[in-house]
Image (cartoon, rainbow, N blue to C red; front, side, top):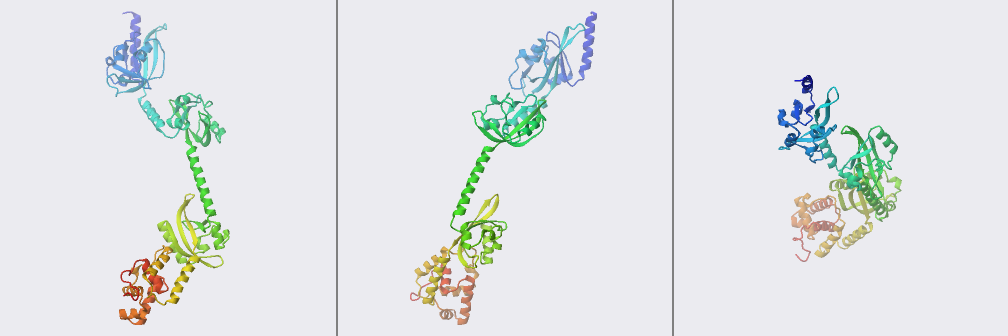
Length: 498
């Protein structure tokens, strides 16, 4: 054996000893693509334990292992790193997916570079493939890629070294109408996403500093002409060991449409509120603070606006009965709305007017409020009272009333009857119910006393108690109250028909 051969073998053994314990995978090849040796790291990266499992040469290696680019395209056998180095190519950081030809589930990702070993005269005598297992990094990158693409928020990623876009997600393409090819590779000068930004100088400065760009409004040019109002923000990140900036966007158009619709709705409400001839008031639900009143309210109650706005309903004190006011708002808080509840309203000059109030809950600037509408029914009430009074004046009892007249009177009363909680028939005692039933039969006090075998004074006391509990003031009102509730309809007969 010549001295040169011995020297070469000695150098190789020393080289193998040096690299055997390295974490990088190393495969040593002859110039004819014969695989001479591989360290443990290289074997592990291929999922094998012995060097012969790699194959004797490049051809057998290609039969045992399938290689794929990161875009899922297969690497032709002639372009395997082991073939390229044999052709004398010098390369670095070639990313390939490596898997056994019969088991694609055992895929690993290698970053491969080449090296040539020369003798003292500079003649190449061996070839070396050095590889790193970057499977975990590739998996993390893949997860990022999937998350980035699936994110509905429009986004692009710009490489800071040359200010070119390297990634764009579907959300950005759908928002703008650009195609992927129109964005990838473009520079920020060609597609200026900061065009018209309200703080463009700050954004450019932060971009140069590789620092976070705060949210700001901007105008994004569209491929078919025109522009779109957006909110843009930038977040620095590292991708493939390169400094990049992630730009994310919010499309302002849907929000703008909502704001326009809301403004138009508020304008319509304001116009209707101002122009309606019916007194109307808006107060907060929390403390009944008056937020707004219309001109009809001020005119009808003769109040100047400064004595109403900013004060509570209790402070203005225009509802005559404090108890009725408390019951009204308690019922409104419980039900959320009221329909035609009778209340007495006091004008600034102390004059009382009869009103029916309807109310509903509305949201104003995200706060619950009450909208109260007051209908002046003073004249109608006066007409009803005059009718009842005239009947009572002519007839001291209801003994001659026909069923039709009683029921029509009940219907007239029920149209404007309060919807607030009132007394129930069951609130009367058994004796008071008997008395009310005989009143509805048209009997006078003496006749009731004889029927129930009671003293006349006792009957009068029962009648007075019934009036008080029912909040009525005459026999006819008591009869109407009972008819409204369908009481005693079968037992009652007008006098002369019994």
